[in-house]
Length: 453
View 1 (spheres, one colour):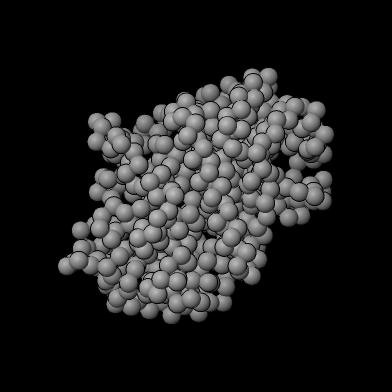
View 2 (cartoon, rainbow, N blue to C red):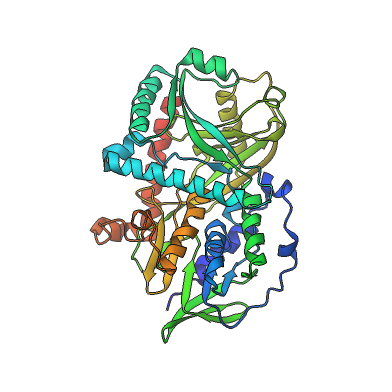
């Protein structure tokens, strides 16, 4: 028996604690079909999906031509989980720079990770081309910015690795950076093509709308209490009753080792703060936008929204755990980061501020696939929840329907070989894992503070 009541209850608590709605909630309309859900729980389904986030609804989308009866169980309401609180940046950048990936895993792994992220962005674009929902999707370049001679040396090495990985990149010196992007401070930067940006909540609503239109049953406010194997089928017990199915997919990014009985490595919950400013006049008429981040240990990242608003997050606000109430220090740290990043005539005011959450794994790869016969999971996206979440739906559908996929092995729940190590067994304990993570983050903060001085 798998008791995931506490896990999903944490997801509900996140929504209840998060008093500050995101920018996306204020600028995105909920589709009429979601307002007309019956919320009736059927007694049976061919496939049950737990979680109506990007990966859960992507799975429903990729199963729509199979003829299966699909039921999606959402503990709260669609659009009030992690997706609606992210930045909407679709990047082919991994969780750590490519130099570190090369040192740890070799050039073949670097290329494969890069290719998987590009594959995921292309898959999202292919989906959107078939739909008429407005998600504000567009392709953009990225800028990876440095501020010192040491940063420039690092970026030049990073540039060489990116080229080896097949990323279309260009190294910019200070003169080139200033001429092309006078509103960005910095001494050098890597410009990389192939990224994109989107309204993540509109994207999620699009998936939900299409899934419901094609026969998927979405049940909101349906908290799963336990899952029990019963004569070759799975019984799922919820606050709205019991439903059974031969196949269950758990698409929630929370403590996956509890769900999987220790067969995947721990996923560490992390939260960071994000702000959106008032419109900035000198950014309102930009012909193109860029996804931005810098070379600090706890890096800052940003994108330019319509009307010249700046959306910005920073690793300086990083906390281990699911702290989703905005802290008093978040606004100060983010405004300082904004002033250090942008060359503006005046400092804009903040219009929205909130915290987002995501799961981090030890090797920056998510867990996507089967953990038991006809029991699947997806989670641990390391800040790539939109790209890898959508790809997770495609991957899970390929597992369930017994179809090949080029990235099944890369993200399989058992992609790490050292699951039985003593260190893993210790770090699988939540308190020890959190302690180790806090020690690491404190070390990163000290290094980050030295680099920013």
